[in-house]
Image (cartoon, rainbow, N blue to C red; front, side, top):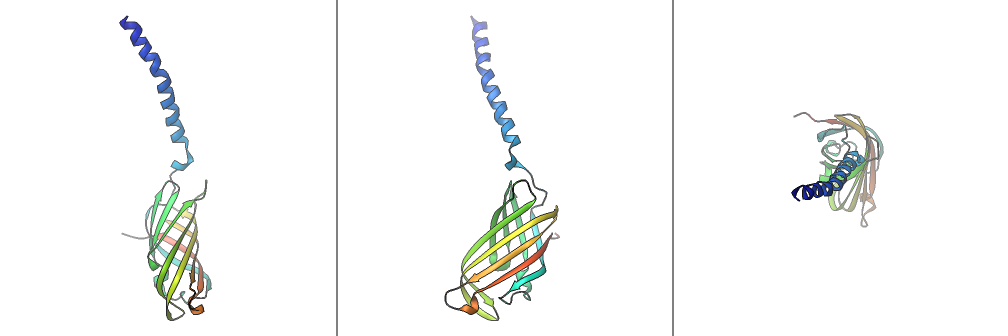
Amino acid sequence: MQSTRANGAVEGMVPRVRLLLLCTLAVVALPGCRAHTLQDGAYDFRAVEVTRDDCGLAMQPEVFARATLLTAGHVVRLNYAYLSTELAGTYRYGLEEMTMDATLGNVRTRLRGQDCQVDSVTVALDSVTQSPTRFTGSMSFTFQTRTSDACTCRLFFKYDATRAGP
């Protein structure tokens, strides 16, 4: 009698073990768990080419700032020092390319040589990984306000970001 119970218990476990094995294989095979080559950490941004600057910001070094990259699977976050901007986005499927954006509200900044109270700032970033410590791409800032045309402007630039030293 004891032997029959033991055999029944083992037979009942076999489907569970198979199911567990299949689930484990499915999780390992998911593309969302893919590791990307770009290292997390601090990066220094350098403008390579300014393609549009209605704002008069191209000559202000604080605009091309340091940022901290944090990756979790395909999801990325970039804490960009200028305007304390926190961008969020994803890697493009199957590629070492990221796209991120952010929207800021009620921002006080200097544009075209004057102090501005801006209703919103939209920030967009596209990038391509060049190496584990470098990425390049384009970035834009769009400043909008309802009270002053002088404070409504855009800055578009191409950048090169390299991993900052310790």
